[in-house]
Amino acid sequence: MKKLLLMAAVAVFGFTNVNAQDENTTGGFAKDDVYVSGTVGFSNTKVADVKSNEFTFSPAVGYFISDNIALEANLLVGSGEDFDEDKTSTFGAGLGATYFFTPSSQFSFTVGAGVAYASSKFEPNGGEESKVNSFGVAVSPGLNYFVSDCFALRASVGALSYTSAKPDFDGAEATNTFGLNLDLSDINFGVVYKF
Image 1 (cartoon, rainbow, N blue to C red):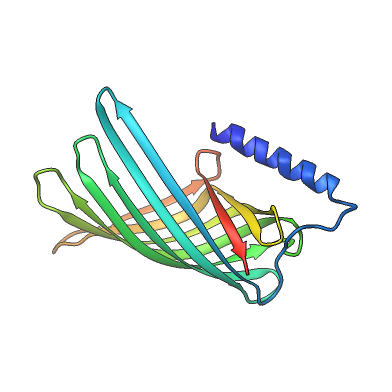
Image 2: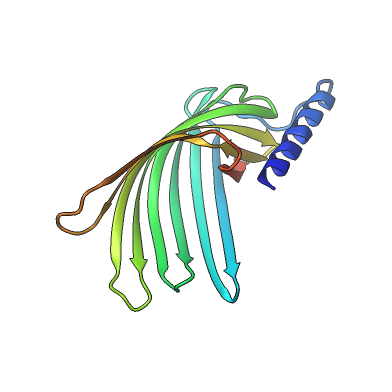
């Protein structure tokens, strides 16, 4: 399903760009532009009569320090409940920079890099809660497409990432993870509003 959505989005972007060659383009970024963006995620899994769900929300604000580079600060809020009614909640923040290859155009390829810190709390059904603190660094390619002068759609595909997560108790050891995922199984969509 994600592959089909991505292929449809690329086809629409390409068709719109071909038709817009003789017309004035919509949107685009320039130095000193400010924008807000965000992503929302929700998943629900059901096996027989047992359900699990997860919700994430990540608002961000960005500022163009040059024609091609935007600095961005974001928050991450998440919650979930699994099959055993174990609950998870997450809160975090991050800083990053995104390079736009053609920022003044309606459509632009991007490369973003960022660092993030998050704290997650796990509350098992009938058990003792635990916390995990994590730090991560990631680099991800993406797309930005203006549908009007102020609104744009954003997508990122995969990431090159490093994460270190450590439970919050004495004597705990960190789990370090390095990953490279550039396939279509890790696509994130978002919306951008330019002021």
